[in-house]
Image (tube, rainbow, N blue to C red; front, top):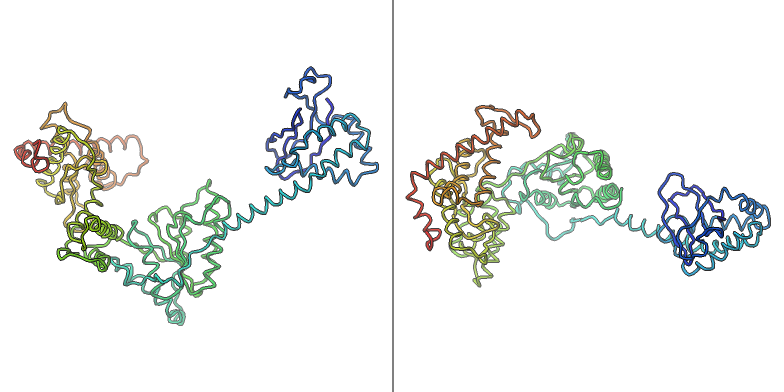
Length: 593
């Protein structure tokens, strides 16, 4: 088969394979290789049995480098009348057929003409006119192809730069300024941050004596404890600009965008110094570096460089918040970068009362609303939970058509947060309601008669969330630690529902309703053995997740032992007070018990 010699320059992108087949041209991508193979255009061999079949796709191909006649003809042309045109056309041909999703379109509507020129050039390899006509035709398309390739590059790079300079949230002139008066329930953290406010207000007071404040302050704690609000309050208290970015906003689809955004953030902050930079959820970019997270590593590296690039006396304070301090890279949390670590805990009863009073002060309240009593009944709630509670109560009051928020609506809101949303439309048979009533009665009776169990808050067989019934317990006080007696009592309460089903309906009629209880009890027992050292057989040892098979077998044996002992204790207890089942069940489900 005769072929048209093509070019194989050192392309920066993998070229396309230009393939001519009657009746149209088609383009198929080449495989990506460091050294591209020569491009070639091929035609059916006149001696081939497929020559008369214009629809055949079986084309004989061979390298142009081996076609001595064509090579000699082109050499003659190169030395002849049109060396400049030929070289230019070859460059144009390279531009046309090189890789790119826009480069192929100049050939549309020109397939027949190109095919005819190729046939003529192939049939007259020593005719400069035929060769030059083909190359000149290809050269015509060079300009458009190059232009649109360049346009494509400009659009992509402009989009890339736009992503890299995403707008920074600047709250320096915001009317919604927060101060320490707006932050309740975390007095210890506020006290730690007062020196930062004093420094921002009067930096010379510290620099005169040679004092230096930390470059970075890391706020850690559970979600909803007020870490972001604390950072905004510092800026508002000191009256300095506040730059806010979330950790997840740095990374995008393009590599290098995160590092560029870090640089832009610090450049903007230096122009507004003294100021505060706050990065929320910094674990999104500051987690421990891994080999397969190259783009994240670049962002973290740039952040470390920027933190090393400014001094304490420049007036820039970097603050960050995270719920997962354990996964942060040690290079980020070391002294000299994030020097000060402040833990923001859930509020105590006094803090909850202050938070409730803050959110209730602008609401019309009924006379029966008592913020102090509500604070005592919400142990474990954080600031976000309490704000949500007040909001749900206000919405409930609006739905009921009343003018003031009362205690019943606040109690409804608390139950909705603790127990989930009621599913009143769910259909349950009478037998299912009866079984659920006895099951929940078992939990309630065990909780009431077991020393160390938390007080019962509410028992119901109204389906809530994914549960058909529920017994909720709330501790009477804020607990800083839990005793072994309390943990064993929780195991007993978990087993109360399954034991009640067995005693009332028989072993063969126990249900899957206790699966969640058994799962919770198993996790609690494993926590006691592996984390708290509350197993006499294993002793006071903290055991990691990855351990030997022998140790894992011993742990499993101790967990099963704790669960079996709890089941037996509950069975003995409920057998003694079986007579209390019916009155308890009647209160939950009078129609069936």
